[in-house]
Length: 252
Image 1 (cartoon, rainbow, N blue to C red):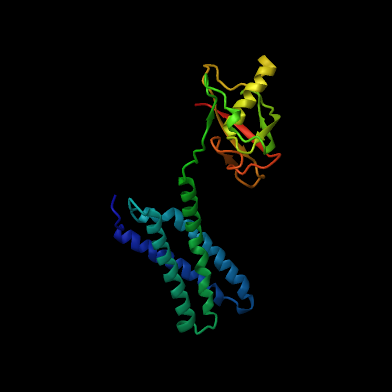
Image 2: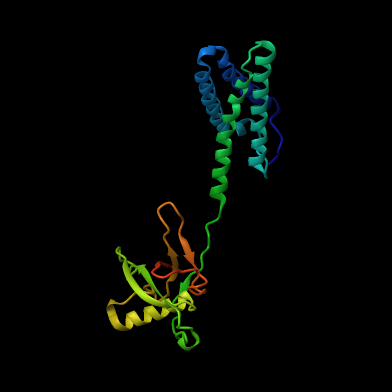
């Protein structure tokens, strides 16, 4: 795809948008007594023109294959700067008015483009990949003799006992500070299922494949989840006493 402008239409579009910005900037000539009101209206109109510009820009210009947002920002700033300078010169040289500062009403023109660029950049961020823990079918149990049991935390695991359960269950467990999170969860699952039999915790799907588990803490409604690494110890994960650890099943 070429990066060139469609010459005639592109130039006419730029000139027309600059002219519209100039007209909004000249609202300051209507009534010196209502300058603040006219300035606010001019800003709103400039913002509206910025929204229209966002949708019209690439109807008149050919988008480049790379750096499209930067290219569009450059064109947007050209329109804004030309409009602002034109308003300033008209007030200063033609109308001999002392309110040349009205030219700053064009500032909101670029805001819609910056917002759209920010949103596109946000959507382009790939989803984070967090480490999963899998139940080691046929694997050996952790050797507790190698774990320092002198420092113990009490933590709470919270998750549905069965994959199809809607309600979550809260389980308390004693956690050695130097034990990996995944190892404690393995011990907890085995102990609980040994004691509860058919009412135990489901850790494999219908085809006997182990679920992948994510462990995280909820830090509040407006904060992202804090995920824990199952291969790191409770100390390395900075898990504190009485933490509520959410455990979430994921299919392979």
